[in-house]
Picture 1: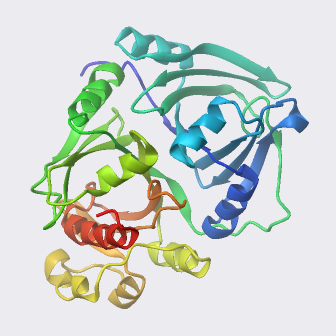
Picture 2: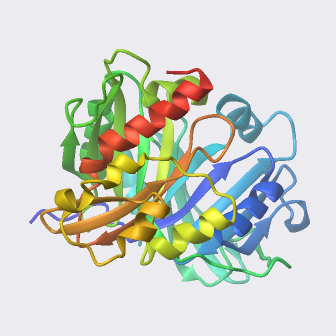
Amino acid sequence: MEQDFLPIKGTDYIEFYVGNAKQSAMYYQTALGFEMKAYAGPETGIKDRSSYMLQQGKIRLVLTSSLVPDSEISEHVKTHGDGVKVLALWVDDAELSWKETTSRGAKSHSEPKTIKDENGEVVLSSIHTYGETLHTFVDRSNYDGPFLPGYIKKTSTLPASPIGLKYVDHCVGNVGWGEMNKWVEFYEKVMGFSLLITFDDKDISTEYTALMSKVVSNGNGFIKFPINEPAEGKKKSQIEEYIDFYKGPGVQHIAIATDDIIHTVSEMRKRGVEFLNVPDTYYKDLSDRVGTIEEDMKPIQDLNILVDRDNEGYLLQIFTKPIQDRPTVFFEIIQRKGAKSFGKGNFKALFEAIEREQELRGNL
């Protein structure tokens, strides 16, 4: 087998650029059960921004706001609203990762640099991907601080109450008309990923709208990136709506794994998180479609959780409504019981639910 030139150990962190990081951090703590772990800002010698690192399970979220009107961060928020800027990848060698990807055609954002403090050193490098999204390679093998040099340990007086979120299952990117194959090729050529699954507009369509999607995965399967593009339909697809409001390509949703979706979603609903709604008719022939599942069907239906089966098992999944006012980024909560797929059997019900929301916004 060919040597993997870009071994990735997992998602290191996901950084959002937001309008108000302090308040966003409160949302993620209360609604999603994240715990405040680290902070960087004026108090730590960084004058133009504030960043909060929150953690739950293996998931690290960084929320960053600009403290000045004219900066890359404030421009990003002005153009896109709150959105994902960095999908950071945990690697053994950030310098080699940068060399291998840029030599294969990646556009460099920042060359490898070593940052240090009393807790050791971290090597970082970054490349551009779709839209204004970056991949940052992080080698933290010689570091034992709270997050990165420049950050100090920070806890909140708010008691941590995690809801069972474990790790990032996959991150989905939306790109423009005819751009999906270009970006799939980027991940294949530049990052050594392989094509896992293809969905065309026959798989992902309703009476009104359609989209196409391809899923790429790295060698060990820890990183999976579905890439969506719009397809022709009678009305405006969810991908077009996203691109209209995000003003270009970007991260559409982050899927987070749980071992107990009933507990996780019950907690999120209790804490005010809104989810897409599928009609009760979805559940009428569910057991005929997916066969026997271990979970009790009543809470599955009460919580509006979707179920799908593939050759290797089944999965349970649910999608939040957008987590900011623009209809852009949202979260998926997923529990896999053997299934390796992405819920193809739920696409129609899910997209009809999205269309109902689009219609309410006047964007269908």
